[in-house]
Length: 105
Image 1 (cartoon, rainbow, N blue to C red):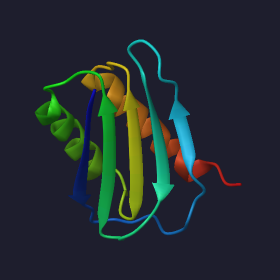
Image 2 (cartoon, rainbow, N blue to C red):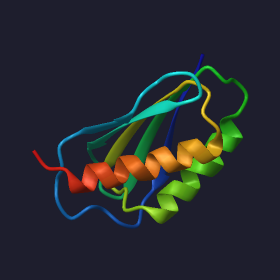
Image 3 (cartoon, rainbow, N blue to C red):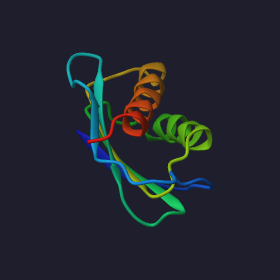
């Protein structure tokens, strides 16, 4: 199991606070993403737990692309992976952000 944290500068922060949201299910070839509001507003902290060791550079590229496309300033994101491909990771992150922004409770 490999675990690491990456912090990315973020140019854009969501305008309002949202409750935490969990998206996806950890099972064969999939992952879950937890999105939470946090500080500081000019950065995004992403924690990854994955059984696939040695792919940190690929994770960094996928996460960097995600941060460039989404307003993630002030967010903490936790990813529990079960061997998802980079395309699935990207899709699940976008889905998690859509859910985070749209659902309020």
